Length: 324
Ligand code: HEM
Image (cartoon, rainbow, N blue to C red; front, side, top):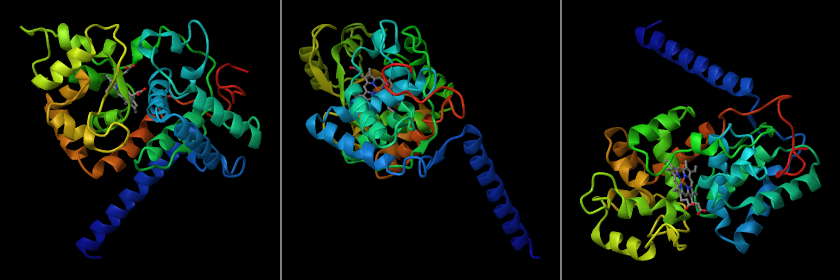
């Protein structure tokens, strides 16, 4: 065997071993693409159709549901804890005050229960519906694994401890995402979710009036016209307008968000500051184009594996808002 052939065999072996490791990792977690092929073969179509109905009635459903999937996975893992009602549940945390899209998940769950009672978890429905939100707004899809089960617990004390804040520095954001097994490339691609949806003044005013170490009080990276627009919209944190996070194409899931922040036109402080750090700046440039769609899907797959309940852990809720 030539050296070249020997090297090729070794390389193929290495690929085979790593693929085996990857698949056994996924199997060990009990997650699989096509998990419901036998038990509920049309589940993904049912959820897509239901999401289409909800989205055509209210286009804000798409960003709402995508953000729900993120806030679910980052707090106690992807276990549908964010969907549970209760005065002290995650929904009651201040950082979750504007979460929405719960009714779209309820509608999808009802449609799924009609076809396959007691079979599909709310945690899985949320991840399928997040993928569909991206598809419905013009983004690329990705294969979503099923097999998650629903948790029993949801506490308003958890979101502030687990979710990233718009006031965090890049090293703080990286540490927050690393704790969820997500690296800098994943974090920047996932931030591209801000290609759709809105932000409220309460999450913007820090940047306008109380920015740390700024003589003017505002974030010096803001261009004058954007600063003026945001100050007019948000005279204080109680002002209620909803500011498009992507000022150019707010309803379309595309890479425009990255182009905006390269031009210093990010609305959320933490988005703009991805340009401040070498480890994230290159990733912003890499996502400013057609590579974004694939990068985003791959990062969502990693996020959607975090701390999942599988096998006999947890339960399949009948109603996503309450434990059985
Ligand atoms: C990098 C850390 C992140 C920070 C600091 C952050 C922060 C924020 C803030 C402050 C808002 C506005 C919320 C409001 O006005 O109520 C927002 C909106 C949003 N975020 Fe993030 N986010 C981050 C990452 C993500 C990720 C990873 C996703 C999804 C995978 C995501 C999806 C969204 C979506 C879709 C919206 C718009 C929601 C709507 O229109 O209702 N964000 N984010």
